[in-house]
Amino acid sequence: MGSSSSRLSNVPNGQELMQETGFSAAHLLRLYERFQFLDKDNKGHLRSEDFEAVQELSKNPIGDRIVEAFFLPGQETVDFPSFVRVLAHFRPKEKNRTREGAQQEPEPANSRNQKLKFAFRLYDRDRDGKISRVELLQVLREMLGMQVTEEQLQSIAERAIQEADLDKDDAISFDEFRK
Image 1 (tube, one colour):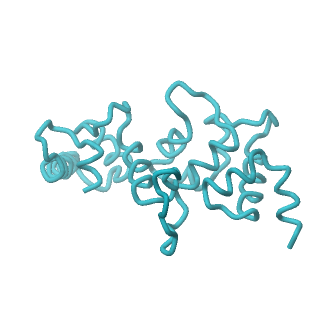
Image 2: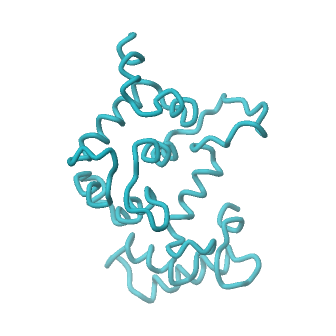
């Protein structure tokens, strides 16, 4: 019982990360062990190549995009706190969590809005705040591969843009994406 919280002192920013992400001490310890496993050089950070050891990502058609989501533009490494903050997007949303004082607290990483922002970034490759037809087609090709024809992919992308593009700029903004 006390072992998880006592070992949490070995985890960088452990208490702060528990508050920020909602992960329990036991979850943070498991994530830290996984991080250390991936950090083969024991440098305290991961490079994109380090994620190759995660088999689920190598099998995922958009695994490269998921790995890219761990890194800010121009950043080549990710430390443990940043690693945990990204993974927090995948936590189930807590139904009974109150949002009193929401102005003072940052929005939880597993909130609906933050999950949508994360998903949006997977599509918005050039990070210009819009999902272009080209970007949408790239994701569709990666996800569907040879299962559909190029003509079908074009049609899917065209319909998605037409339905979501409320301001008719031939791209999908985050506000349009979340509706």
